Image: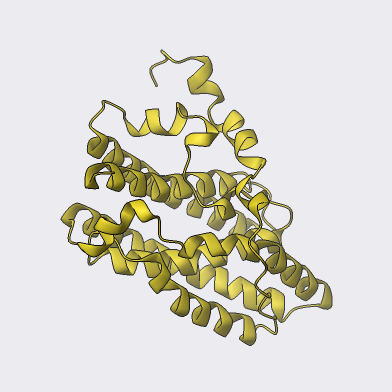
Length: 249
């Protein structure tokens, strides 16, 4: 795989991850535990979808095959998406939403910090802008982790259960795709494995402060790579563009 094709795939992973988590958070509109949090989650959804739009637009330019960010969002099937499986997981309760967001926020803060120093100036500029949003996201989700962990026995139990359920999906964040080896070597993108130690330390610090236990690492399970939720999500997200492909908005 040449560097252009590898960069296209890398941008798809970043863009798809933001697109899918943006959709998941949009499902929380009117379902937050209080008005302020309802508005916050909706705004975070818009942030992620905005990042997805920029990244997928760049991906389309890199691919140079005439596909726009809308084409990449609405006219690909589930098997073509490259998002992290973590963000596909459905909203079960508020603790699950916050736990999923926190684990992703810490990861994206570290990733965008590294990408802001990319040898690709366009990618570096995007990452620097995204980092500002991600820092705010992380502060917000970390504050809720502490609030729930230090709250009632029920909130503590729900938060711990959510983290235990989500934890196996975090391993995917730190796997370097062999196709991206040249991009890593040339400083275009960081090595994912280099992010793991600091991610673990940041997550551990917040969980310890919150009275929560670090979930135990589990053996890799192939079923984690066969999420049943993405097709359901895309069926809803892509319905209008696929039903009316010639519509102009």
